[in-house]
Image 1 (cartoon, each protein chain N blue to C red):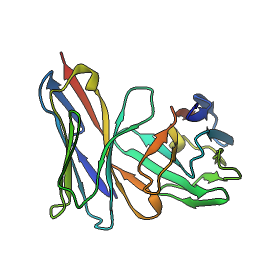
Image 2 (image 1 turned 120 degrees about the vertical axis):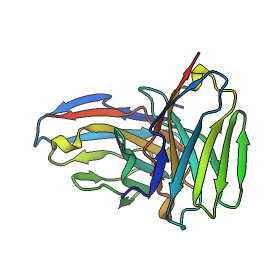
Image 3 (image 1 turned 90 degrees about the vertical axis):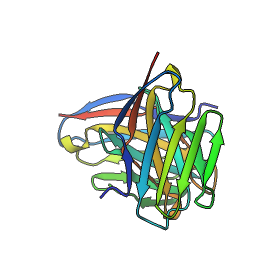
Amino acid sequence: NAGVTQTPKFQVLKTGQSMTLQCAQDMNHEYMSWYRQDPGMGLRLIHYSVGAGITDQGEVPNGYNVSRSTTEDFPLRLLSAAPSQTSVYFCASSYDTLGVGYTFGSGTRLTVV
Amino acid sequence: QQQVKQSPQSLIVQKGGIPIINCAYENTAFDYFPWYQQFPGKGPALLIAIRPDVSEKKEGRFTISFNKSAKQFSLHIMDSQPGDSATYFCAARGGAQKLVFGQGTRLTINP
């Protein structure tokens, strides 16, 4: 098992550009989430999904879109990048109904200039 | 508004000491409280978790203490080692399986 795979690992964008952060898991997990990590703020939930075709907003969803067409993939789209979106982004998936046993990817470090 | 408040932000302990990291929450609807460990350049990894109807849980050298009436919980690391140096996050589970994280504690264990 590869676990949770995120690509790319690093990305620099110009303000206004759009891009998609990829996330794939091979563990047949139903629950998937996207978090951003900023210094002193912990991890904040952007969007999450409880299964294919079902997504919902988290704590900081503005400027981001997601879709879940398959169980394996959960891409995060930045519509028009802003410097405030400079952060480290983590995708996570979970096997249990409690949702606490999340397996995290290794992250994407995004810089918006 | 931070729903889970974590302290301290950083902590330095000598090898063999017992670092303690504290978290407090307000939302009584939270029903599960995990701790995550994160090494530089890696994603967080689940360390240990506790339900609110349990006052203490031990896994190896890691112990969670939970005080439901005070809405506080803490992580203790017994016989700490330099390899325990990492960032630790507490979290709380709310509705629809969503986790709310604390701000994180950067722990350094000196040899």
